[in-house]
Amino acid sequence: MEEDVSLFGIRGFLIDTPEFGALRGRRGGALIIEKGRISEAGDYDDLRRLQRPKPVRWIDRSQVAIFPGLIDCHTHLPQYSAVARGESELLPWLRQHIFPVEREFTGPKARAEAPQFFHELARHGTTTAMVYAAIYEDSCEIGFEAAKQSGLRVILGEMMMDLGSYGQLQPKKVISVSLLESERLCRKWHRAEDGRLEYAFSPRFAVTCSEKLMRSAAEMAARFDAYLQTHLAENREELEKVHHLYMSARDYTHVYEKCGLLTAKTMLGHCIHLNSREIAAIAGAQSSIAHCPTSNLFLGSGLIKLDQLLKAGIPVGLGSDVAAGPELNMWRVMRAAIDVQKARGAYEPNLRPLRPSEAFYLATHGGAHALGKGNMIGTLDVGKEADLTVVDLAALVPYPRDRDALGELSTEDILALCVYRGGPHANLETYVRGKCVYQAPNLASLS
Image (cartoon, rainbow, N blue to C red; front, side, top):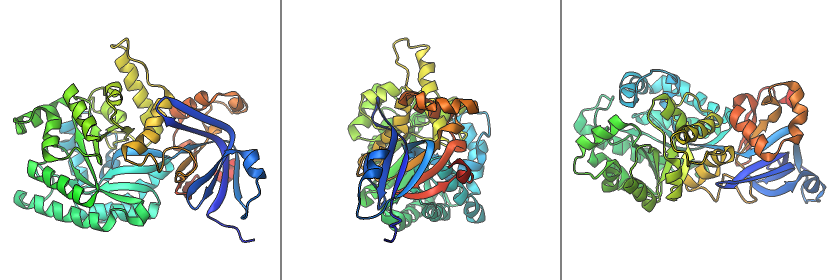
């Protein structure tokens, strides 16, 4: 009988978090993947013995953990070459280090870097990413072409700015050109590749966007049922500038409310300095928040009140936010989220720490919910699309002799090992819809 390449089984320690605070683990587990979806999940011995109409090709390795693919809810394609650059706060950092890099992200430079960027996402175990391009149409077009070839699940948008932009257009022409380009990109790429690629209208933030641009972006996103992404309340100097620009607004979030930017398909980056009214407004609009702790620590932007956001019912995911975030490693972002909560706890004695399993939830099922994809990805449940990351646990222990003790560790301990020591050195494979989009070069020697 001819082997069905769309049907295979994979064996390992299955770990996922179906809810915030809930951790599931199955040692000696396995998944059956059929036509890009998880068709069966259970014990390896049981699944191996079952008779099926078609033969199952088994991927059988020892000492691996199988997780849902990691989800990066906020990152910047043109900025990756500028990671770890600069020591200033947000606004001077943007002017001195980021706008010059984004200005060059077009043509040959974009074509050279975009494929590497998406390869790096896959190498780090990220299967879904929400991404900003530069202000140029070709930077976004090239980004989508690279995302298409990468096999990853990507939501991408052309950066929109009409105040203090680094582009060459006359200010009066910026809005019409930006909207025209964004519409063209959306028509071509939104829900392309059977829905794997989607478009996000991307006004940068209120400091660099007029009300007219923000309102027009919101209207266009609604017309195409596309995503919106922007930054909100990241830095106190930013808040002061927004107050002076929009003095009639009650607060920063009110600017976005008036422009129609708060929707159920809106991802708001950072959201550190929000008052209670703003939190309620975001929750009421069913908008989502991307928590970017590595970026916030690098720029000294502040410590997010994660507990208040979650209590309000706001869907929260995690974002690497390169280049302020130093790398695309979502395991590191999880660690930083835990560290931020601990730092707040030093001054708020009643604040409960963030557990590794809770940080992992934010990077998987929480991120999926934040993107409106909780029923599609984020866990290892039967029926979900098979977005997976496979981790070599032996690569995470300090000494070779410690590998023998891996079988004695609890699910909590295994996950903590991955959260605190995880990275691309331990990532063996990354799958999107059951297709392997990354495989470690040394995989054969580890099998």
